[in-house]
Length: 552
Image (cartoon, rainbow, N blue to C red; front, side, top):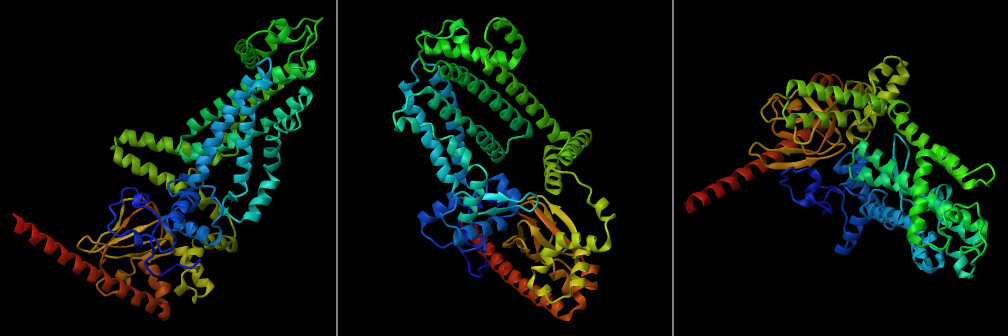
């Protein structure tokens, strides 16, 4: 994927830059060219990564990374749907609503005396599920845990889907098969319809994706997931109450039903569907709340015991234990780093309240901690102090070495000097809107952009350019004689920068004439360009000022 030196047309609005008053045209916001028709641009906006999706921002971390991912998909995978795209999010929202409606209709459907009356409505939900299976063959997936990447290759998508959810999705969409052959046997129809329960895990996964994309809090996501699981349990409990009886009786309307079934005891065989559903739903709630008590109340020693009732007890206990352990372990077990992070944030909030910080400063501090720790707390220096020299060097090179190695002018340096430079780099974080340095201040360091966007301003306040991932700035004050900053720099987005102090620069990079000469030439070009734009902007301001005076 090569960067284009010409001025490309950006397909992204300025909205990504969080209210930054950008003076640059849209064509200068990205170095990745996407040339196609307006219709194709709209389609790309739907199927490529969505820059407003918090999951995409956490994965790619910068405007440059998001633009590069869009360019990669446009050039190499034009028919694939990105997992963090607008279209995929809409599909998941529609599918979650469709599945919840489908499961609810399923319980209502089998509460009737003759469920055949509304088979077409159930087949419509099967069609939605089949449509989702088809879309899944063209939707990429995120691979990896710590170093995540979006896989968009169609063959890899098919293999991954086939190994995971394809069989379950297909089994959940086969209830229409008996209707094709006019099969009315309940012992065949009911088990096939029961296969729809395989949709439940997919529904929970989609619900999590939607809540994350909508930036819901941890508490909100927890409540939504638990309530959805409880609701689905109750709905499927109602379905199985009827399905088990229908299969055991061999018919939806048996002529001589068994006296020990709950429908016979409640005398509901000839009642309306609404009454039958309400009664079954009440039983489901009772099973969920006090299963063992109801079991003693309904069944006498001389009567037959419903196998479904016993199974329901096991499922209820499993659901309750799962919900309890899931969220206890998420806070205290497998995600202990996140638990420490939340504890630390609470301490920071208490400190800010005690000091009576204004809301603006509170918000910036919390943003800083979120960016610095990525919702997990881990003391890296303790690990680095324990590992061997070689392993410590490998870890340091992984942290900042990739950024150093990718710079063309540093590739000629020996590997030992790469390690030396990386050990001198200091990670610094700036929140969107922070001033990194001001013009006419003494320059004591050079910055490498790891993730983020930085805007450079001239003396007159003209925005000169945007710098993205892999760029560096601040070198002019280090190589010119006056040692002062010739421009101001502001963090357009949240930025992760590596800082190289002046003494470290002079002790490493400046010792190599070729590399130092490259820095010096680039610094002179940037300085001249800034001066030219600054003079043009001053001229424009003088013209505007004269025009205003003439109108007075």
